[in-house]
Length: 158
Image (cartoon, rainbow, N blue to C red; front, side, top):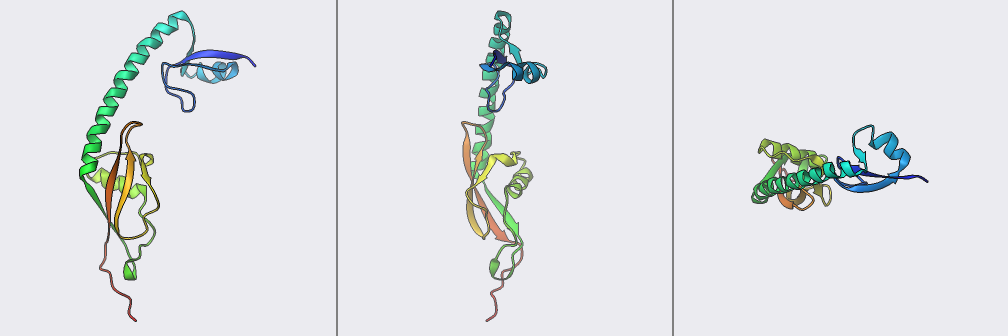
C-alpha cells in the first residue's frame, strides 16, 4: 500500500496534534487531509511553516493550562447544591446527571463542557457526592455535589 508523510496543521483525534509529522495511507492524505486543509505534504518549505505552528501550539497550550488551573482553583473551593424532586422517604425521581452539574456551574458563571465531567456512578440518592472534572489533559479537579430535596421529606405511614 502506498504511504504518504504529511505534516498536520490541526489536531486530529487518533492521528496526532498540529505540527506533528505522521505517515498515513496515500488515499487518506489525498482525499481527506489535504483538501480539508488539515495537513500539508512534507516538503522542506512546509517544514518551516510547521515549526512556527509548533511554537504557536506550545504557547496556546501553556495559556490553556493556566486558564484550566484558575478554573480548577474555583471549583475546588465550591460545593454545588442541586435541588431535586423526591417522593416519599426521600427517593429521587430519576438521577442527577452531568447536564444538571453543567447547568449549576453555568449559574456560577463557570463554563465547563458536559463531556469533561465524570461521575463514578449515577447519582440516585440524597447527600454528598464527588465528581471529577477534567479541564485539560494535565488538569483535573474533584468537585463536591450536595443533592438536597426540593420538597419536605415525609416518612411513610405504617
